[in-house]
Amino acid sequence: MTLSIILGRKGRDVVTVPPEQTLRETVQTLSDMKIGAIVVADGSRRVLGILSERDIIRAVAKRDTDVLADPVSEHMTRNVVTAQEDTTIPHAMERMTEGRFRHLPITDDGRLVGIVSIGDLVKHRLSEMETENQALHDYIAAV
Ligand code: AMP
Image 1 (cartoon, rainbow, N blue to C red):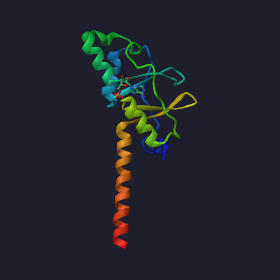
Image 2: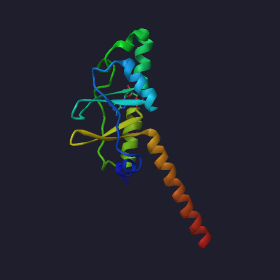
Image 3: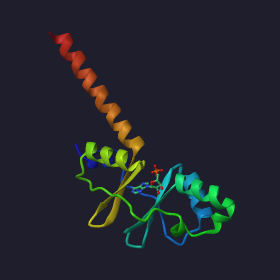
Image 4: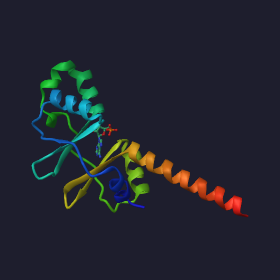
């Protein structure tokens, strides 16, 4: 099973910010949208970086709230691991576990077409387990 199943269910909208947007505005966007990370992209939806709650906490711990006036580009992770819609779900989970991050942008030909979070993957796995359980119950009841 691939990530396209998850994107088909949750949708392909991705909240992005331009690199010059301030951390203050970005914190507000994260709070308003109830999300934990934001993709930094250019006008063609090419991924330039990713900024998560962790990056903001790290920056504030270092320089206090002065950092809120900085552009996002100063605090984002530039080396973003991305996946494609045809990436398998176990492979995506493996990459996120190994890389210790909770967000995986999905690209097509270098352009952003979606994002999955660890929460989306856990939700999918739970529903798979429920289906498997039900199938086992049905099987046992039938024999
Ligand atoms: P997260 O667990 O997603 O909140 O992110 C933890 C750290 O990993 C932060 O420094 C993020 O900027 C970085 N990060 C998040 N997602 C990715 C990704 N897909 N590729 C590379 N780094 C990431």
